[in-house]
Structure formats: structure tokens, C-alpha cells
Image (cartoon, rainbow, N blue to C red; front, side, top):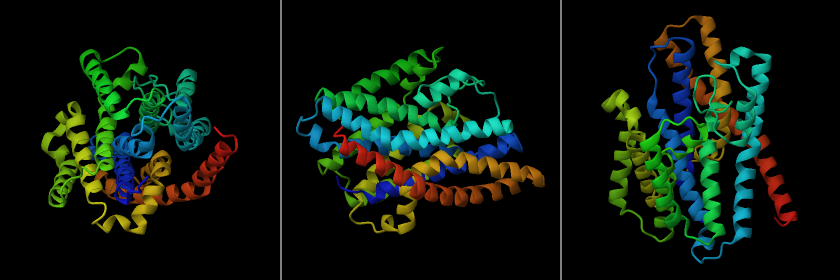
Length: 350
């Protein structure tokens, strides 16, 4: 599979956007309920979903392009995704639970038994606030990822083209969600239109595999437009943006990914070592940044800072500390653990 450095840099961008969102959200939750919140940071999740769809199509091209697939290919695909996603997430979730036991103030609401079990199993469950979030809140996106992987594996298992097979299926899910939500059963929230962002990514991946990319001039313009949209949609549309997240965050994110992929061979910016390092560590940054943000918010409370000053302090500190911590966790824990599980997979011929 061709390595797209631009996409790796976008993974870094996505993680850092989420960090900023949660940093401003922490000030709202723990210091001033009227504080400014950078809702544009939520676009980091949209980027992750689109990039996931893109990577899955590129990584499995030898299977869907030839109709190879089959049950063994499907199981191998799932196992690779499990060893990539599950261990670090379980570690972060266990750390969060340990903090709650030692320091109950680490959470804003009580944690139940089923809520805990479902968090480890990637099954959405209502928390005490009536939200379908796991113990480690950012883990909600991983429920969508695992849902996507299951359907993608089924497509490979039945030797179906994942792009052509999953796009209409996810569109039906999204329409059903839009027509009949809210649901009493939390797992039904997996039918959210966010699923279409995986499809956006898959279609971009298909375009890349078949050399159907944007002309360079259009790609550059598209990149500028998408970045401006992601940064300023919050100011243009205000609270109404919450009703159109797929349009306001998903579409610009997809345009940005498509533009960056199209510019891969002509833009050197993506090759900067810092961007690649942050991209490599983006998963660790995403999972563990809540601990950093929580600690910083607690420290700021001690200083009784004015709201704007608190925001000016917590955002850069969160970015730096989360990045450094994520890089360390990636190199010391994630890489060795993932490599061990991959070697075991080869040894046992899974």
C-alpha cells in the first residue's frame, strides 16, 4: 500500500483539533459554564472517520480489486484492526476507571457496571447523563470504528466490493436514524449519519487507487476552502451547526482529505518530521489527552483564573503536554505491544 504522508499529517491535525475542543470544554465544565468553546475541534472526529475509510480501502485493494477475499481474509482483517485499536483503548479505559476509584472527582457523573462492561466491548450504553458515551468519553468514536470494521469484514468475507456494498447500506442506516431518532436503545445510535463519513473516505480511497485525483490547481483551492470552512463554520452558523454536522464538518473534511491526497506527490510540507511523528502518535494522543486536560483544568481551578486567561493557558499547555505524552506512549507502549501481537499473529498463522 502506498504511504500517504499527507494523510498521516491530517491524523495529527485531527487529534490536535480534538484536544483543543476538549480543553475549551474543560473550562466550560469546571471553571465557567459560559466560556467559549471551539466546536470546530469536533471536526477532528470527522477527519478520523474519513481517513479510516480511505485507509481501509487502500490497505485491502489486492482483495476487493481481484475478488479474492473470503472468510480467512475477513478474519485476518478484523484481527489486524483489533490489535491496532483494542489494547491501547483498554489500557486507557482501565486507567480512567482506576482514577475514578482513587479520585471520584475525575468524572462528572457515576459509572455503572453495565456502562463499564459495554465500554470495553465497544457497545454504546447510556451514561448517568443520558449520553451514549463510554467510560473514556473519546472512545465513542471507536464504537463507530468497530461497527465499520465489522461491515467491511463482511464485505471482504462475501467477496463484495466494500465501497459499492457499504455506501448504500450506510445511507439506509443514516436515513433510518434521521427519521426515527432518538432511540431508547443506545446501540441504535451507531446508525448516526457519521457512518457516511467512512463512505466519503472509501470513495476517496477508490479514487486514489484508480488515479482519479483532483487537478493540482483545483486541489490547492479545495484545500484552502475546506480549511476555512472547518475553522469558521462555527462563527457563520452558530448553534444551528449542531443540526447539520455531516454537512458542516463532514463535507469540508472529506474535501480536505481528497485535496491532500491529490497533492501528495507535489507538496513537501507533509514530510516535516514533526507532523509525521504526531501523525504516528495520533491514536495515543486522542486516547490519553483527556487525562492531561483534566489535570490542567484542576490546576487552573487552584489559581482562580479569569475565563479568558484560563482558555489562553489551557489550550497551548494541553496541545504540548498531550503531544509529548502521546508520543511517549506511542513509542514505549503502543509500538512494542502492537509489534508483539503482529508477530504472534504470524506465528500462529491467523
